[in-house]
Image (cartoon, rainbow, N blue to C red; front, side):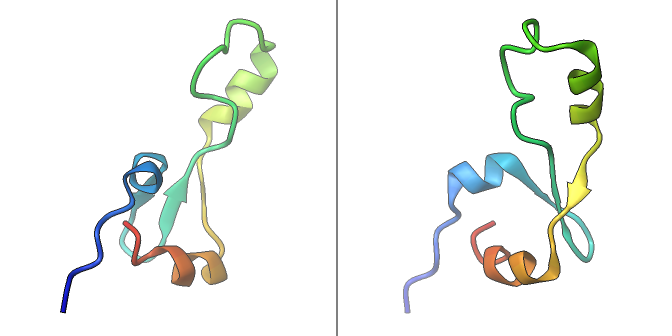
Length: 61
């Protein structure tokens, strides 16, 4: 049975934690000089995926 390859685009955005997946906010990777400081600060905090998305995406990482 062939193994499932890691989806590299997803693996670059998501980080595996112990019991969930950490994801950052969109729009914070580049062109942050044009955005105001409040949106840059808000983008620094990460959050975790919902349980339904975790079940769907855990095999891709």
